[in-house]
Image 1: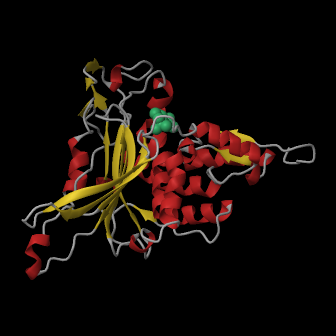
Image 2: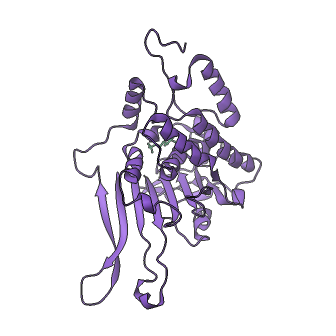
Image 3: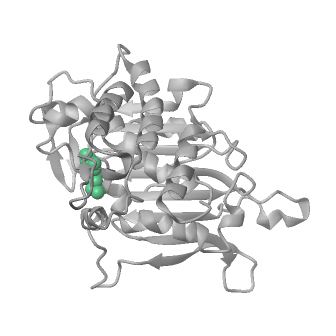
Length: 353
Ligand code: BG6
């Protein structure tokens, strides 16, 4: 089947690609019997989103960001993908998957890889994917292991002024389900660039607001005795907005106009889909076009999946048999309080959308 003499043959696979490393390997070996790696297009629709493709451009096509993009200047990174919808009519699938397999193993790790990767030596498919995989290979949980991972499940609550039911009452969900609809975790990337910089990731359903963003928070200024006014200032922050607003915001400090030296946080704001008429193509449109063109840059290579499953397996295995106190967050909030604790105990806080 891998013979292409009578035209091209390509297979496109939508997730879930397995439910752990073992089942993903099995699926992959079955595929490899009929197709070569170049013919396999594993979809992660987040890679088709305009702003994900923009992350590399923002980082590598600008002189001003890349020199600051490391532990020398960055305090931490946080990536949020929040949804207000519940599981809708997909309860049967979702109850077997949960947020960690449905969002974290794929979309969230893609966002992390693009944010943290080194500059590829060229922009060809494999050079980019090689650099992305290196991020996953260096990824680890902090030494307290599963204490750095918080899971949650929504109970009933109010979204858009409407009372919505809890996860366990959704169609085709087990009434005593222990499936998580929220995950927050702190991870580390053990390499020269990122050593010491925590990456906080969180995703969940039935949260207060829908949106996906990456927040790069820069280090505080050193405190110097003669610069009293310059201490305790808001940190500089770069926010890459993936959706629904697509843009970049840069927060810095400026002087309040007037005779007093008052310092205020101000913002530079770029939005690429705010003007009426500027509509980004749908992620799937872009991806299916690329399949026809034979360009697999925006698809997941097998080794990316393999390393992604390795880290997710560590978490799901650790959870097995552990009691949960579900439901542990109300629909319409930002998830369980342990998620705040996870970041607050490091002296930091979530930047909500
Ligand atoms: C899918 C998940 O991959 O991504 C869904 O299976 C989730 O549960 C969806 O709702 C989110 O995608 P988007 O593009 O709406 O952020």
